[in-house]
Image 1: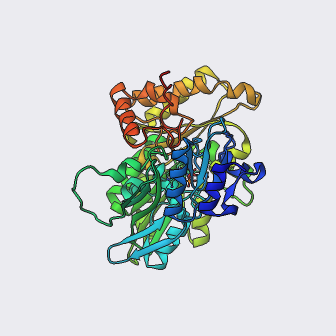
Image 2 (image 1 turned 180 degrees about the vertical axis):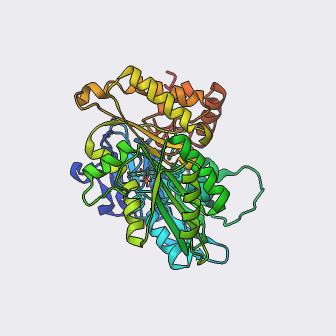
Image 3 (image 1 turned 90 degrees about the horizontal axis):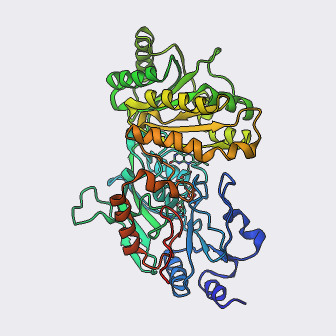
Length: 474
Ligand code: FAD
């Protein structure tokens, strides 16, 4: 028996250290099946102290550690590399809701809680935790924080960075930092918690968090609207905000090719309107009081049609219809996975430049590959598009995969030229790590490396993610 593995078993119990290839397999491949890694073991601690003890053992033995939550990340951040040296640390057993303070509007949860469990705990206390993603049944709060997850309500409530007040973290040397403060005002120096948000597990392991709660939603109105073009969608967003203010909670753009994939691959899906347009918007208003929002939405839509910003629309008449409209949006990733390999881009530009980006990207890609299928959709209210390319019917998968670097270059250069970001909400992981030097200045990369060095001088915390591993000097 490997003495190191034996030590880990003494800490977390025999059955919570997996070494059998079959048992480890689900932890060693990412959601899209694009990254496959190898590991010495998968360890599942149940408490912060157990995790800290495991981290101490790994640090003492110079063993790299890969934190993992729900394993729904889309950039290979939670998958170990292929050298077989790492231990995957799954946080899923740290899944307690520690406390809810309804007067302070906060909930304290462990990192392995699924997002859905936290939403449900908030609802049971008459509150709302607003982060909402299609993967919410599986993704965890630790993963949401570590990727600074966004989703469909960022427009109104902000992303994970804006929803966190305090953190508990196990540092790469095994020390525990208790920063579980539920304060909205705290100006006592550097905001350390924010360093761990979006760090993709490269600086330490988040074990618990204090999250903001909001008044529960008591009324909402959801509509599927066909728009003439993306410029009209941006105009519609402005009109909705002028007429409905902060009640505009979600504003999603869906390209026809994305909708078609869902209708083709996901059983039970129906087109929301009889004739399809090239572009649609899924829009939601919500309020914490019992007002009727349907009338307000209907009036705003009539105005939008009058101004040429919308062609036609349908307002959900029942909760079942609300779910049916959202299912069309939320199943796009799954439908695309079923369709086969696609070249994915998760990018952001200022909202006002979305139409320009879409037009320029289409022209550049079709000039390079006339048959390429563009599948575009996303959180356009946040300037965030998922801009994916599917293979033309005739092309073989292998041939299409080989186009990835060139397609990335076209899309990312355009994004950068418009003042945007090559990763809006999914992070860098392994997928975009090597693109960073082209799109961030040497000064910015130096600052990032300095932070990594300060927290993790041995380079054991999720190596090879976000930043490339630096060769050690002989
Ligand atoms: P994992 O995949 O397990 O890990 C992600 C990263 O965080 C890795 O680098 C990992 O090492 C690190 N990590 C995990 N837990 C911890 C921890 N406790 N401490 C330190 N580091 C940790 N994302 C969005 O932002 N918006 C969306 O709308 C969205 N929609 C999605 C829809 C689908 C169908 C799918 C499959 C994914 C979607 N995602 C979306 C991506 C993904 O769900 C999010 O990135 C999510 O936040 C990842 O959480 P996880 O628990 O699965 O993390």
